[in-house]
Image (cartoon, rainbow, N blue to C red):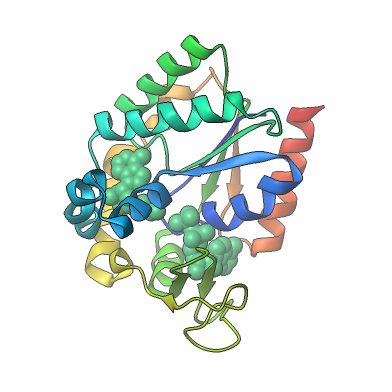
Length: 220
Ligand code: ADP
Ligand code: AMP
């Protein structure tokens, strides 16, 4: 089962992926998480992409497709996994075409694209209030889903902070980039891959119920 979670930053992709991955034995592949980890480790890749992440622009397709090739091939070799759950990729038409080529090469396909269609107002509110654990990456929200002790992760005790790109100026930039470069990908997949649009403004549990229904049907 190979799924793509699609939607603007803040639409709830990471939150839903966290809930789905164990139940369906899927590897959650978030390009944003991979890039932030590289920045935290100050690897060659991390040094190269740090300023791009800070600005809210996109990292080049070549770099992203290299990362994804490794990630997807690793899932194929792991016999305990039933597939992958992509979050934040593909983000340009070039990446979607690169993914097509990789899937052709490995004899895999996307079973469903799940689009979390959230309004600009709600994603701005969510991203402004999002807080993330620097250690285990658990995501909180200052109003809807705060950690029990402010700044401390409930799960691992790590520090819970605001992502650098979740500040107001960068949020607006990221949403503009989504409209200009990422939303057009949907036309690339129209009629070729089953696509399911969910109202991403619904409460977290309602979105999960809807996704579970879709994945259940796709798996049957
Ligand atoms: P994405 O991975 O798409 O960028 P996240 O899953 O990190 O989005 O969610 C962004 C913020 O919104 C987080 O603070 C999260 O707790 C909150 N959130 C996610 N889904 C919902 C929802 N359905 N309703 C309200 N808040 C949500
Ligand atoms: P995210 O965690 O998905 O919101 O991504 C955070 C940032 O990482 C983005 O604003 C981009 O700078 C970069 N990024 C993540 N995924 C991609 C991708 N598929 N293509 C290009 N840049 C990406």
